[in-house]
Amino acid sequence: MSVKTLKYEAKGAQTLLREVMDKSGQNLLACYQCRRCAAGCPVGEETGVTPDRLIRMILLGDRGEALSNLLVWKCVACYTCGTRCPNNIQTARITETLKQMSKKEHLEPLRPRIADFHNAFMKATGHMGRFNEIEGMGIYEAKTALKELKKGNVGAIIDEMKNQAKLGMTMMKKKRMHFKVDKVKNKAEVKALYRKAKPGKGA
Image (cartoon, rainbow, N blue to C red; front, side, top):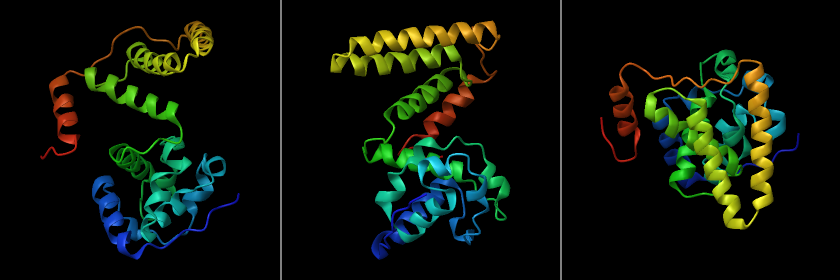
């Protein structure tokens, strides 16, 4: 697995480190690069970036690489890294923080479809407190279809509809497609948490 040479940015190192630690709730200074997280990461080989290396980017103040790497967009939040970490550092919370920082800085996501799914998931979950497949996938498919329509790729939209219909039928046969709308008892509490998490909102 080839890797890029990281750069040390003295001026921004402390600022980036403090921002990520405050927003993620993770103590990155506790990382001593034992690489146990790297050994268990299911997407490290594919992304070219392992959890330990991502933390190193932040510690060195390499903001560009920290915000724009495939691990941020392909992390599956399996929490294997945190389970293996002797200091309980959860990289999934770091990648989620970096996603939000990237979005705030209006950076183009390396994987637009993953970003669209992430946004659809968050929007759908905010309504009922749980992710409902029909609503969430409806939001996601509508957004991706609109993007393709703007490009004039009608064929791509039709192919996507066929593929999703085929997948939906397969899931129904296996009883993995749920039409029931699930919701938490106190939706107001969930909505309050979403409002609190928005930039500029205090406790």
